[in-house]
Length: 60
Image (cartoon, rainbow, N blue to C red; front, side, top):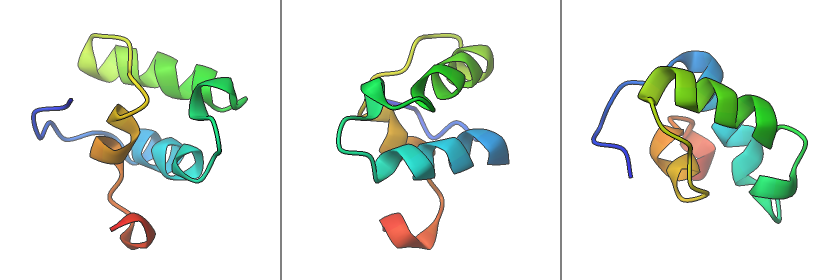
């Protein structure tokens, strides 16, 4: 999981979209999410990392 590291608005928006997907790693937006996540945080994401990236009120 993330250690409360701030993420970009773009990464948060992708995480929000993927948070509603039935199987996020198979969703077409997973590839750009994974690339941006790796660029920002230095490692490949796990599906549970989606919820650590979201700041939108609909997922809280």
